[in-house]
Length: 319
Image (cartoon, rainbow, N blue to C red; front, side, top):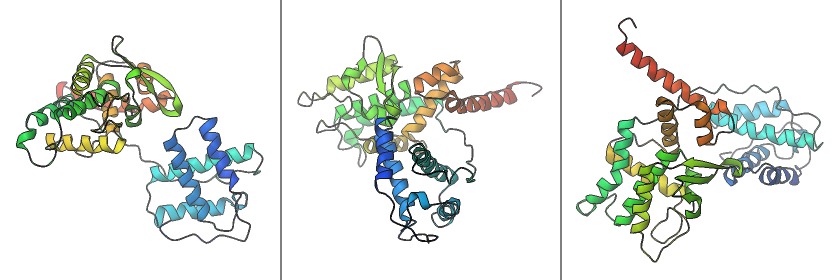
């Protein structure tokens, strides 16, 4: 906690180390939570637990967590969304402890958290997407004349980048899902991809013709010495990591003069928004995105409704 700890109320004994570990194992085995979610939960429990040295989890009460909430809001200056994620993990932990009869009450039940501001998803227009999708091949053609970004890339890497961007826009995949893709997951003839999503839930997504063409061009250009199982790889044949893909995207956004803060996840927003704009039903979009709840997908309807209002205001004579 930035080198500081909160002052604990009262005295107690050291927290049972096994409780957080039992909980994390439960999330991994029983709930099929991803490794990334497990790491986030572990970090939250470690940080919160170290804020009250000498006190066990069953000795913490509402006042302790109000103190912790104040610390996150003021000393750490965390936003409402981040704070709510931390306390969601803690609430889940205490529900687990209650079910195991380690604690009698959940001290977080009545704790009021800061209200999360509702922000509409950011997305690219269709014109901007086309500009972005064309960027790798355009940069590849000019690579020999350029200095800096793209100068050291080989031709097949530009084709790979083009395929990655096409996959994001064609499928709406999360970046972790794309990183984990293997060639066996792709049914070229059926134009589908088997995706392992959150909670290790498998779903099928559709590949459009441009994405399939970009994939074929990239794989045909790969050096024979690589021949990897992973779909998207680096020069040594190892799968590309999420960070490498994020940096790659940022480079092409800058090249196109688009907002460099646009992330792979915002390409997912773009995928969903464009489907709804073109008349796709909400339930189908939910399935394609792999959302467990329809309410998660419904945020995109606010975006399309907002755009319809803009069109109406401009076009209707009595708007």
